[in-house]
Image (cartoon, rainbow, N blue to C red; front, top):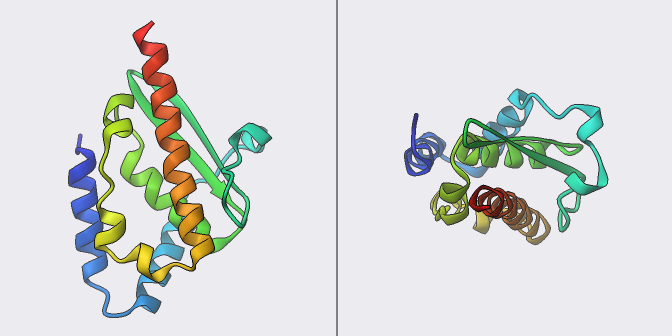
Length: 142
């Protein structure tokens, strides 16, 4: 099983192959197409990521001590972004997710290239994933 840092390094490496941002956006869109989506029963108010301009749903469950995220969005680039976050953070222990330094976002230039609304949405996704991790961490500590 790869660590969060190893997965981030893979993502940075992948994005380094692209010469321009149009190609990087295409890659993000492709990642969104590969996202399996979210069961309609999980597209509930509690799972909506607040702060995103488009609708994004994010759910977490714990299996064998690891958090598994599932997500969906009604916008193609946003779906790609949430897919990227699921790829990096899913299938790790809550403590690892809560403490993760997600440096890949800056290293691949996402924060500089996204519109302010999308950058806020990405930050909201990260915040919600870390909040899920903290909640599971607290539950495990009981």
